[in-house]
Length: 76
Image 1: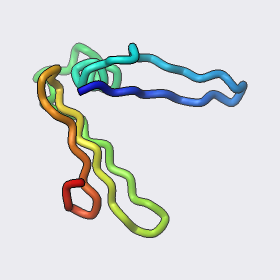
Image 2 (image 1 turned 180 degrees about the vertical axis):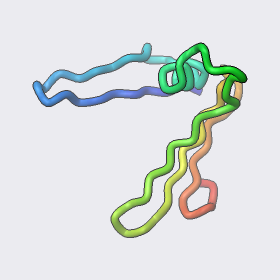
Image 3 (image 1 turned 120 degrees about the vertical axis):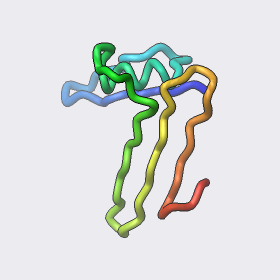
Image 4 (image 1 turned 60 degrees about the vertical axis):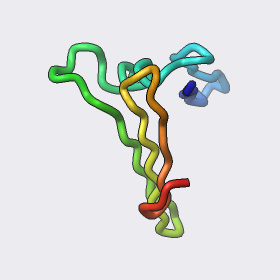
């Protein structure tokens, strides 16, 4: 698994805090920091769309586990 996190900035630049082949561990550390105890098992990002769909992205705190996506409770 690799993950990419970016943020377009108002000045036109792109903030890209992780390497191109970042792991779930890298993403969890970016969001939670490295001093949270006990450490998280994962990070779940939940978005509700304008049409009411609930999208969950599960990012494991592991370099060998697999991320998953669910839409309205169903894996995709």
